[in-house]
Image (cartoon, rainbow over the protein chains, first blue to last red):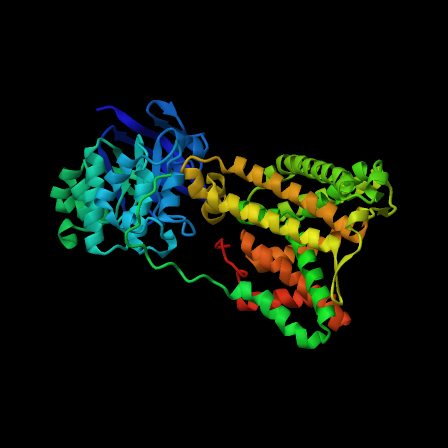
Length: 240
Length: 336
C-alpha cells in the first residue's frame, strides 16, 4: 500500500510554544488512519500544519510524492485535500446551498454527488435554503463534512467530527464516514471517541506531547486494553 | 447551481428590522422638534444625500475591515486623490461644466468621475502591495503604516497642486432646486441620493447573487476556512481593496462637488465620520454601513440645526449610544 501523505520530522511552533516536536507519520492510500491522543497532544496542530494553516518550522510533508510544507493553504486544498475543522466552521450567514456552492470550487454542483451526500445526510436536502447558522450542531457537522466531500478529494483531514454530538448523530456520522471510506477515500481522522475510532480506523497513530508515541493497526489497539490504558488513559469498555 | 426543492425549510430567522427602523424613527421624532415641515424635509433630504456620500466612501473600508481585519487609517487619501484627479478633467473643460446643458455637463462629469475611480483604485493596488501586505495581522503597524501613507499622500497633493483651496463649481444643470410647494430640494442632493442608492443596490447584488459575493461574505465570517476550500483570499482582498479605494475616490469627487472645493486635507474630518459609520454599522456589514451613514448624517444635520453647540460631539454620542445598545454594531457580521 503506497502512502498518500507522509510527514518526516515535522516541527511546528506557535508563538513561543513548540507544539509538534518531530512528527513522523504516514497515511496509506485508501485507508482511514486514526490520530488519537489526550487533549493538548498536538492532534489538531498536526492537521492544521498539513493544511498549511500553521507553517511547519522544520521537516517535510509530502502529498502523493510532492512536497507541500511550504505551500499556502489554498494551494494545498487545490491539490485535493479536504479539511473538516473541529469547530465545523460552516459559514453561518450563508445557506446550506451557498456553503456547498462555495465548496464546489471547480464548477457547478454535481447532482449525482449531491444525491449521494443527501443519502446519508437527508437533513441537508430539507434545509437546503436555510441559513447554516440556524442548523443544529449535528446538522452543521453534516454540512461541514458534506462541504469536504462535495467534490472528489485525494485526502480528507477530519478533526473530531463526533465532538459534542448526540449518540444518534454520532452513529449517522460514523455510517457516513464508512461510506466515504468504501468509496476509496483516504482519511486522516482525529477522534476522541474511541468507539468511533474502532469502527472506522484501519490504522492508528497515538500522539503525546507533540510526538507520535504509537503506530499500528486499529484492531490491535482496540483488542489490547492495557495498551489503551497506557497510551490513552482509557479502555474501550468505558466507551461502549 | 443546483436547484433542489427544500421540502421543509427551517423557519426563516426573523429579519432584524430594528436598525432599519432607527433612522425612520429618528426622522419622525424630529418633525415636532424642528417645527417647520419644509425645514424638516430640507434637513432630511440633506441628511440622506450626505449619508449616501459617506456610505460610498465607507463601503470599501467596512469590507476591508471585515474581510482581512486591516485597519486602514489612510482611507481618506483615496478621497482626496479622487477629488484632485477630477479637477484634471473638470478644469480644462470648465466651459462645458458651465454650459446650461445636462448632457454637456455629464459628458465631462462622468469621465472625471471614472478617471478618479481608476486612479484611486490603482493607488489602492499600490497601497495594499507596498504598505499593507508586509503588516497583515499586526494592527499597530497597520495604523502606523497607513497613517504614514495618508501624510505622504496629503503632502504629495500639496506639492503637486499647492496649498490653496481649489474651487470645484457644480455643473450648471445641477445647481438650483426642485420646488415642491414651499420646499426646495437641491438637485445635486437628489443626484447624490440616486448614485448612493444605485451603488448600495449594486453591492448587495454582487454580495448576494454572485460567487465572488459569496466568497466575500464567507471571507468576512471565516477567511481561514475560505482558504481551506482552495480560494486565494489575498487576491479577493486585493480586488475588494481596489474597489473600495475606487469608491472612496468617487465619494471624494461627489463630496468636493457638494462643498464646491478641493483641498488636500479635505478627508481629515470625513475619515472620523467614516470610521464612526463602519464601527456603528458592524465591521464588514454593508447594510449596517448604509444605515450607519444615514444615521451619522441625520445626527449631524438635525443636531446642527437644533443644538449647534452639540454638533462637534453629536456623532461620538451616537456611536456611544449605538455601541451600548449593540456592542458589535448594528449588524454584527464578524466575531471580532
